[in-house]
Length: 197
Image 1: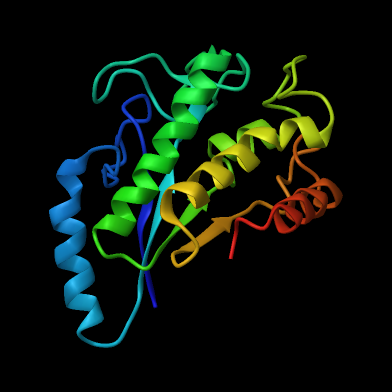
Image 2: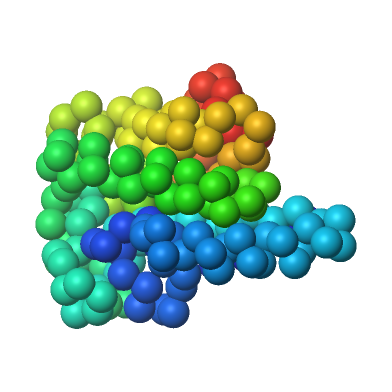
């Protein structure tokens, strides 16, 4: 099996400023199909990592859209102040994930891996980047809601015969970040949901 993509971006407000693949458009399908066909000739499987960078991106790239995140917590590397996502943003980006995963499936890939650690789902999980007081903030179950909605939407979009994985953070190594105990609890929530292989 070969994993590729290095956090391929699922939507226009997560531009490919590191040079990542853009799986947020159908234009990528022929290229993924060609790759899948070549890899499959040798009996190997192909899985693409997909991501929304959330606050880890910059506004002055791609379509020059505002940076979005669970809360308005400044990102240290790019020094941007993200827009706090409203419910329409959340719904839209969950849809981006599902559409990107479906593109990967339609191209003939064998699966996807959702980047959680440090990326948008992980930013929702981490208490130091999620200061929300609505149903997506506060306790761990609320902070995990976005991640679980993404995984469920992906599973619905790709069906049961397509690999759905998740790259997870088990220790943010920050005193106010996601701690190992809560990381394990989040993994148990994902396991109970049953959308991840």
